[in-house]
Image (cartoon, rainbow, N blue to C red; front, side, top):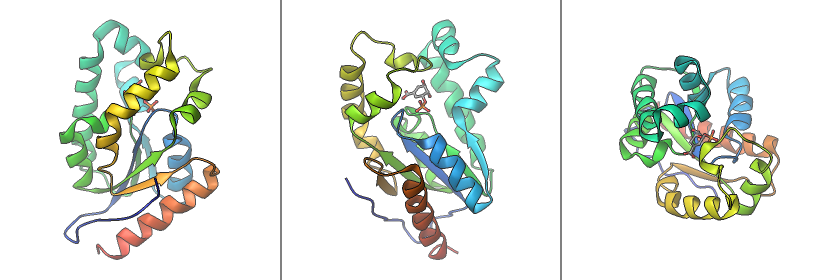
Length: 185
Ligand code: S3P
């Protein structure tokens, strides 16, 4: 999968939203992009954890996944009021079409993409993602990624992060954002 851009001329592009599967580098890339653009960086998982006063693993365990998705939805609605913000989203957030539509109403939506094997390598020693707490994490990554691919493909831009450094990915994201902004002023 390569990157490409396709944004209708009537779009308002004042923010940048990064979507994609867990472990594709949304937060690391997002922080770098925000620094370079002099934008504020916002991570939806961090905001949800701060508001709930507990980590995502506990939200899932105590309240269940639907309650977590509800929290995501409410936060996405608020994001439409932001300006000059790089938004790094939780991996499951764009699976709700209303969330994706809302992001597209004010942000360029960029999806970071990589293979299941690479994702597995990146997340195998981490414990903070309840959906990957599975006896067969690679199998779970493969099936979840396959189910989510049609949603991720609805991003304005797809950036393949495989074999690219974080710095290279950052540069591609910035190039695409500047291009989109220059045609939507
Ligand atoms: C999730 C991804 C996580 C977090 C939660 C659910 C998902 O975010 O929102 O564990 O459904 O893919 P990251 O993509 O930042 O790991």
